[in-house]
Figure: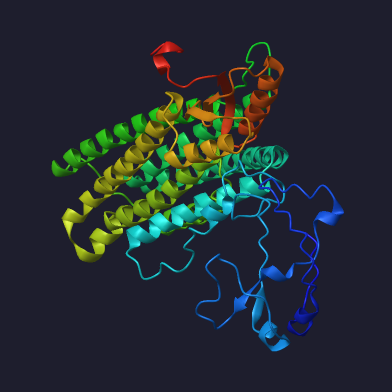
Length: 458
């Protein structure tokens, strides 16, 4: 509101007969209806001496100013009502929204360095969640940005699948030569691993190609589930191959105990070939770990497994070879070759079992983590001022991504058109998230019913 300012020297010039009151602004920020209703403060607003203990009379009013010196010690007090009821900024008049300032003030940042590790982890996760709320509030995340990012990841995944496929073909030939030259069961186990790697590369490449071909009539929702299905199939194949290697290694140990098996011959050629394989797999591992998609994650784990298996193949194969026996004359070292093969097979078996189990959970509708449900709830609560309640927020895996179900409560007398214009944008907003494959928004006018009243329990 407009108000004439006064200095302490000018207070004595204020006219005592000016008694037009100031109009208090309403809580909604209404302006005075007439310009002459807002004038300079009257003298009765000069409330007492600043250092006086009791300046009011029995009627609760301040005594009149007697002199200019006395006026210098009095303070001009005017009360103007705030334009909104919140202490936070409401420049856009969005008082109904959750205040981002309250959440941002809870951030700890680097101030929790002296706390125990588990508490620091808690605050770190909380800060990341608040940052996500801030991104939603200020509109940092949008559908177009995420669509482009996902498409870019798909292209990179396709390129890496082809590179991995070509590399595995070359490494398979190198390991085949090494296995023939050495006769080591550890090297053979690494060779079998490469054979399965080659098969996995073919499967993932075919899967990526099939996912890009969309048929709205045969697969109206797309074929995104092909990715986890392919990984489950690979897990089964790798697990069976590992079990077979364990059986072969056990038979090798039994043959060595009876003297019916020859010692492996791991020479310099075998070591060089396996060393080249290790270097190649390390490079592929470092490149693939930068792209976060399920298929590339599977390739990343595969490259890591290859690095470890080839290191073990070199170490155990050489220790159990003829060269080591001729040098140290320790006959028991020959058992390290099949033992190394068993260790390699067990590592591959448990790694792929864990991978397959995780993908099965995604295919069977495992629930989303609480932090993701919090993000969905935040979006719903800040969607529209006429949204009365958020009844239910549910998200579960629909393959790699999530299927989201949201129940919101709107006024009972709202028209169908207005309710539709609230629900559909919320659905589109939820589906703009990169983790969400499909979202359903159910509109209701009350929230006292049970979920079983609306949906079949399965």
